[in-house]
Image (cartoon, rainbow, N blue to C red):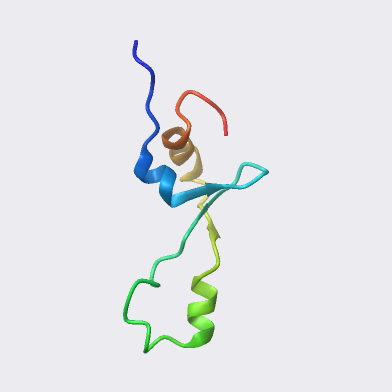
Length: 68
């Protein structure tokens, strides 16, 4: 059986912390930024933890066959 490949698109979008949590960038920071307040844009810039129900599925895409 061939080796499992890392899903590169997912790997580029997620970051793994030292404790193994998956972090992702929040949406809404690409364009139409004038109408958004400074506070809102600042809060959107912070990385957010992936939902606990999605984490196992996404971790398989990042490191198939191994634990993160």
